[in-house]
Image (cartoon, rainbow, N blue to C red):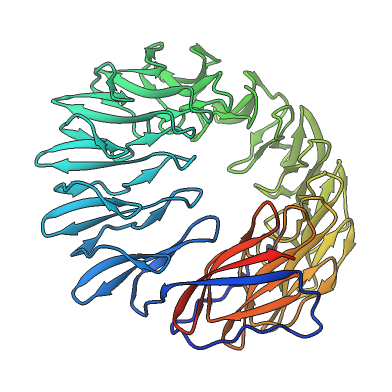
Length: 545
């Protein structure tokens, strides 16, 4: 069996030297819908000793630079305090880009800096610290003071311990809770919001964990040779072992599950109730649906693997697929898995098998956002097809690994396919022009589903393609930069041309020496981003007219 997949990455590097540039508009490229404002922030330093870190909203940049024999973090053009060293992995932005933190050393003392404010000195800061909660509201890190370790949450130090687990601290997504595993003497415990839990001989690596809503917490713990799952402070049934990395909380927080073992047999425990016994449970299983409490896992008996869905084995198949062989719909009501029957690969959707193929692309199964449609890529006799609604489409030599892409309303389908060494964007069943390469990620749709776009290349020339209309020839289009506005009326992307960075919006071009990845639209379709011009860093605002 032969499988041809798209592996060419279209990208370009930031220029090493900041040069002069002029803001220009490509005449005839489109109507100018925006007025531009820019504000100088500071210099763009030539000596960037650590790669630039960019906030997710594309509006902030930070990097480490040298100041004589010292080091400093530059945030949006502002130079921070000088240190003898900056911690590995620093600086980091909070998920929404509102805050920035890093660790620095002066002499033998380490401190964490949050939004420009330097905290107290410690003998060491744990690798992986500091970290933010998903809602940007809280910041925490682990630090060493002499021979003791402690966790600092929002600037407040907690009690001292003999050790803190490397994965700690953990902050709930809603920012309401902070937890970590700590060692006192020869015992381990979990601290939750400053309160110590029960002592155990060991706490499972990678725990505690919080539910997606932040309301529940669970971890694995050992006393002697016996392991338990502790959920909301209450230990469950005892087992010989708990599968590493198997502890899960459902998306709504209503259910807790893990793989466990007793007497050489393995099973999945959901809400304290063990399922059927097997010889093995696949690593990383069980898996919860993204909504609701449905779950699935792969189990082995006498060398045979089978799917177990909501506690019931899927009968009539010889084996199961590996990684990427399962897909839930967004509402959790529908489930598809890859299984093997008679040496052929079959996609089983809600218990019903589809057509047989020689192979099915792992990770390539997709439900539409409204769960009304389901599609996947499969191969038979060396030819690849897209199966939509159970019906195979035209045959190709290969299909890009990004697989099927549905529009937000679920009515449109796109994918990228290869034929005679050329790549085509298949949109609504119709092939686009032939290209040497199409950028990883393939085709995507505007929020209102009315527009489709992708980036393609012929030779050394790249182009953005929007609703079949070709953008200008450029040296490279930055990966992931082509996007639509929330109202679907505008688009933007960043490209390179004539050794400049070109910011393109609705066909108008603004040339800079440097554009910070990656500009995005605000809810009102305005755009804010950072750009370099003649060695200076600017905050640029594009406001709809």
